[in-house]
Image 1 (cartoon, rainbow, N blue to C red):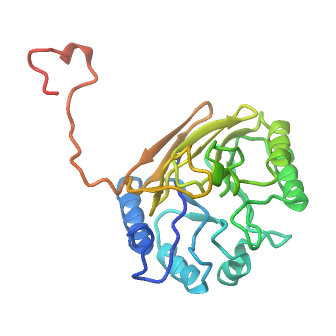
Image 2 (tube, one colour; image 1 turned 180 degrees about the horizontal axis):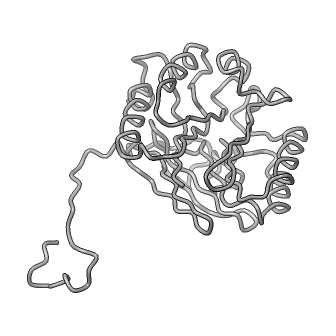
Length: 274
């Protein structure tokens, strides 16, 4: 199974930039790169911050941009989104409680997409209703389950970022612990950093994002830190026993060289080009 994860696409008015980068252009470039190199993917999940300001026009533009793609696209919302505005364009993505949550059947197990949005804040929330919904889905699933969400459920050790992580982290963690044997991997975004770790033994990861990049500034107490690292997305390879996550820095403009050989017999100090 191959899945793609985009995150933090931050669409905004065409021509407006964030960190000197145009989010609409970078999203199109990400799609072009992914469809060129990974047309065999079983699906693409975009884990939130679909719009930078939650404008309806951004969601309409997104709908147009993904409408004719050759692989299915699945959406989560993040703190920069506006749930009601989003659902006015994608009403079919509301669950029975009005949250943007869904279960997808995959070639290997299922994906469960979560809604961690809360009003008037950049922090994440996962209330009793959402936790019960997830508990029910996990209880009825045979597994393995791949969970997709926007907010990080674990502190990353950078003070300003940890202020806006998932606020219901302890309760969410208890639910993960309860179903840890079924949850194969958790994918999130939000931090604009390449991250990996585990929660009650369940691994998680996050790519940097398709537009602007963060920087792990452990000394910062108040401000988020940015960088000019390349735009990226994740490629997920999974089977019944393993998961591999690649970061594809499609914004890298340097040379790609094919050099050396994996065959030990070809390793020769006198003839190898390094």
